[in-house]
Length: 162
Image 1 (cartoon, rainbow, N blue to C red):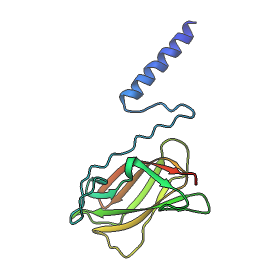
Image 2: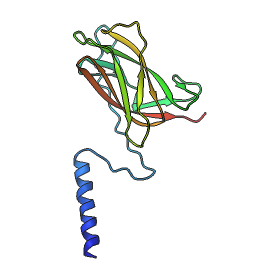
Image 3: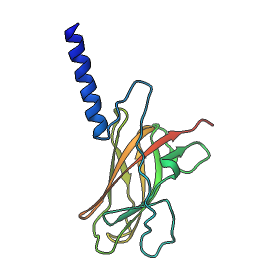
Image 4: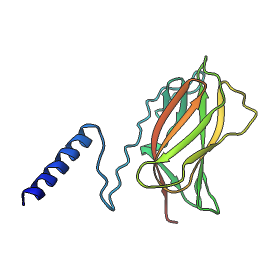
């Protein structure tokens, strides 16, 4: 009985510590996805939008409510292998120079990493078209880098039934 109490007490301390760090324990069937809120900071020369996210000299546009929806009629592409590709625009602020690189990791389950498809021809400054390919639906943390600049954001990738 004492041993059970110590284990329960240790679990309670661990749960408290994780909560203090902003981590939520994941229970089977329960998915917590702490999506990133856009900050509305538009890149130079672009119209104002509440969906812009700017961090460390990089800007992109996030999806409303942090949910990237995929279905047969919507934007994005559901590929034959089941992966999900969605276009994302990026802007490098003045002074940010370098090839855009995009990667991602799934937060709520095991999965191969997400990756960016970045077409050539845009140079290494200013605007860059891209797509992010998610191997599976779920909660994804995306990291984008260009030169010394880096941004991170979390979005939930959802496949909607037709």
